[in-house]
Length: 349
Image 1 (cartoon, rainbow, N blue to C red):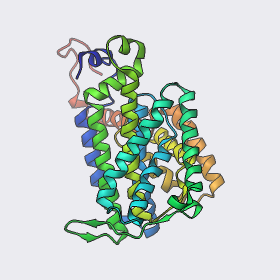
Image 2 (image 1 turned 120 degrees about the vertical axis):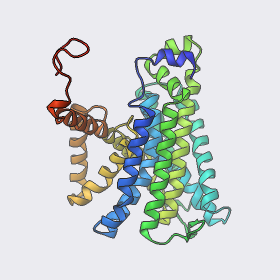
Image 3 (image 1 turned 90 degrees about the vertical axis):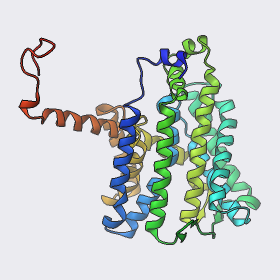
Image 4 (image 1 turned 30 degrees about the vertical axis):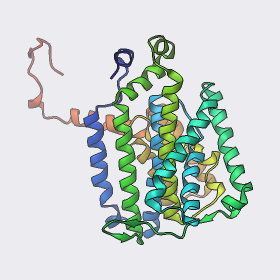
């Protein structure tokens, strides 16, 4: 960790510690491992699988927004970059799923880097507008480049995913566990970056860019690197989605998908390791469970977002975590408290 970044972020540490965030991911993995055995229907399991896949670009966005302070709606399009790289590679028999994943990651990172060269020249809502424009431009290109992308008809993915030792994946439960493995790997990578010197640099630039630059940090390159990492994770998720669903089309990967990712992140929490996953599950499963029509769903999302902003601005996952900790502390037996006039000489609460 560089002295500069450490000094600038001494008052704004990452939420929790590396150990606590890793434990949160381990608990989540244990809880999610039993889902296929207890979920009541195949349809809900399919939605849970899609929610896990969609959480991966949200996890990448959590690094860009939660640590660097830059909100983007381009990640839905970067998700599409990975999906089309994987789908076209399979269609042309260029590579298999496992070779397509790193290719999609590189393509997503490169696309994010190129967009970031322009978008990161501006700040605030101007940055958001530039990323929105890129997402819509990407969708238009997908529609019009029919020879490569299939236009509105999209691309079919006929190849299967083969896992060493297991063979081809066919059942929905197998794809669920594959998605769970990817989402946990993506989450742990972001946690490691969050507590690295790179994460310190991101928070330094976010909190006081002028001071960070004056002390030697290259603020544009730091943000650009975060954007590239988020693009790489979005690309990986896109290929996983293409092989899971077996068909992709341009309407899935425009600005609308980017706005959905922003909503997921704000609901779950950008700086929590499980926030994007929780937000994605809520986004996908709640409307299905309570049987809402599309218009009512949008209204409920709006109300939920307003309530979360008012009651827990950091997102639902951190808010619930704090509430549980307060309950646990309040439920401790009286005998565990320090007696009056303890070591500090003060009255214990």
